[in-house]
Amino acid sequence: MHFSIVLVAAASAISGVHTSPGQELNGRNLSSAECSKVTKIVDVLKLNKATPFCSSFLSIKPATATSVIKVTSTVMKTSISTITSGTASTSVIFKPGNPSPKVRRAAVPAQSNEEVANIAPAAVERRDEGLSVPAYITAYEAAAISSACSCLSIPTPTTTAITSSIKTTTSTVVTSKTVKPPVITSTEYPCATPIPSVIPTIPYGMANQAGVIESSNSLYGSGTSGTSLEGCCNLCYFSVLNCIQAYYFFYEGCVVQQGTNVTGTSEGIGSICPNGKISGLTYNPDTAPPFRSTGTIAGPCGQTYNNL
Image (cartoon, rainbow, N blue to C red; front, top):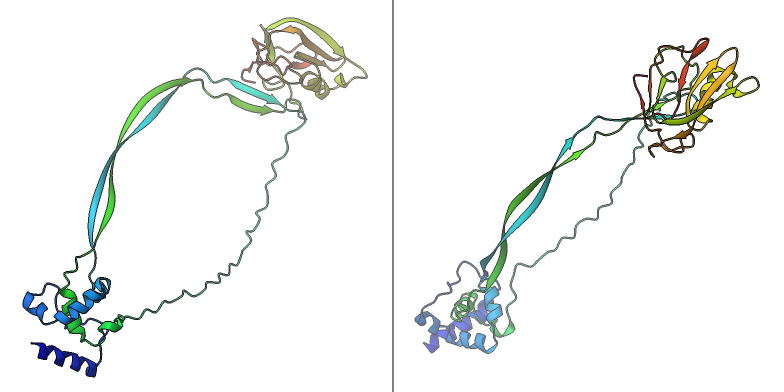
């Protein structure tokens, strides 16, 4: 038996060493009789603690053990049902002059940006497929090395892969809330020229003065801005505080009714309506304008403007 091993070693020295395990390599589970043929090589491997080398030489791949962590979570959701109740109110914003004409913007051609991407060529890593054999074992044939490594009873390494199993349940709480309808806002240019004739539209409207506690009338005649219909309208909307309404007479001038003691709502506070909209002050179409007047000019501090 010893003589046959010497012949194998001598033949190995002549033929050279194959550095990669091929199809001729033996399996890992060898019998005692087979391991006894390569005892010398096994001793050399043990002496040099060659377990890592043998694992690579035999291409022992680690086994994967899967550990599953189960997680249960509950997601709380609140669903709010909105109920709209009531009558929508209207907020009118008055502006002087004429509305700006709508100007259509010319289309601007999109600028084309030429993007130049300098992509560096990916580095190619060349790996030598051969396995480096330690110097202490180069005198032996690859098949003998494989057999000796198999006789070391190298355990298969195990890696643990941890995965999560998440189960989510949803709990929904339904609540409801009641809201008022959104305020409808409109923008008007009451004194825009030309001011229309007597028709049921802004600036003409008859006042219901429920929120006006006290008022006074002032005449703006010759030498004032009240000598024209447009000027009379502008006095009421943009000059006289708490203007209730105004009347323009072409032979006399502008008569402005001003609220001197009013109940404000604190909504729509501005330079002309310092207390906000006047509580209870509403306007309806002027169906019976004063004699020799173009019509009753509604003021800017009303709560509502019905069908104007």
